[in-house]
Image (cartoon, rainbow, N blue to C red; front, side):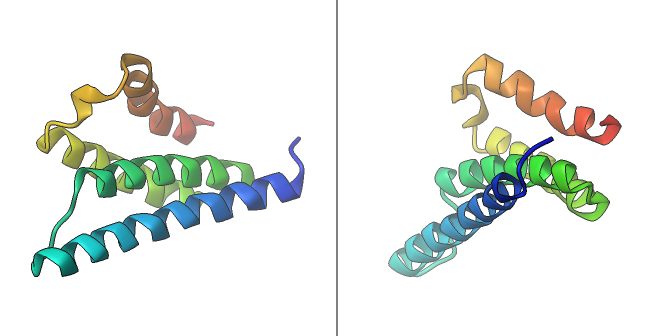
Length: 106
């Protein structure tokens, strides 16, 4: 179906986004001298979680898929609580809400 290098590249890219979000959170927390979780932290978390979900589907890895479905909705909820979720385009919000559910059935 898809080339293995593409699938591995997707996984590494998604993992890189997870690393980037931690670096952003760490930098801002150090600067503020308290734990800070900026909007960008949750936005990168959501995108990276979605990409790792897709990666898990390609790899047919139930552990990755299951973990990312749970994490995905936690990140989405945090964006809602911070009132950032409405700033995303409607197509992205609809896709985001339905993708993990569709992934389970896939």
